Length: 190
Image (tube, rainbow, N blue to C red; front, side, top):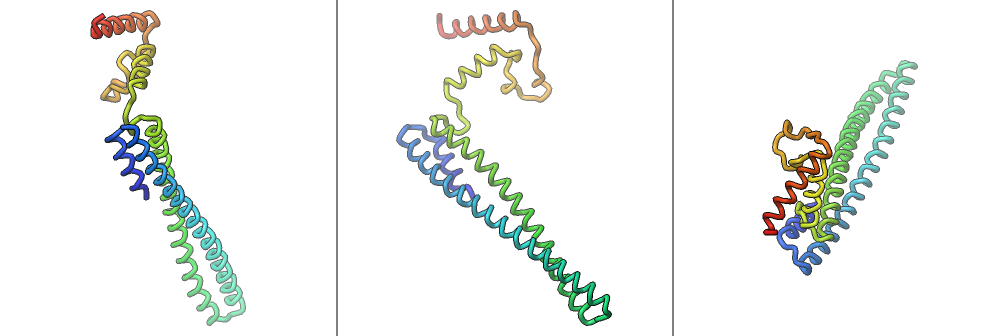
């Protein structure tokens, strides 16, 4: 459903020059409009399915009631016809319930994808490549890592066992920050 938007995001990640980014984000906005319309179509289809399910359940109850009345008065022919119609309506109810479940799942999946693509569009419009990091963000992450209890940075660790936070005292964090600052100054030639 969202192939056009995904293609626009991929194209945007390859080129971030201002004119090209404006064209790409424009295409992404158009794709988002189409995606939102498609989501509305899914919601409408789900609503119609739910309405049809309500009607079929009502018909099934009516047929069962008539079958019971026919059995009560001993009308075997009407009971047989009612059984046949009850089976048909029961089958339709089962199919509509399955259809409703699938439509709900599709709506949930597409809604999640649309949210993800919306955030990627916001990033692209702000000048960040999808999945990319601006220098300001990278610098902020480094500062955050320096100030946190996590000297290595949990996002750079590879295994779950290494991801346990390391508790350090303030003095240890400050010392580590000073060491990193000194190392950074040496690399920059100061």
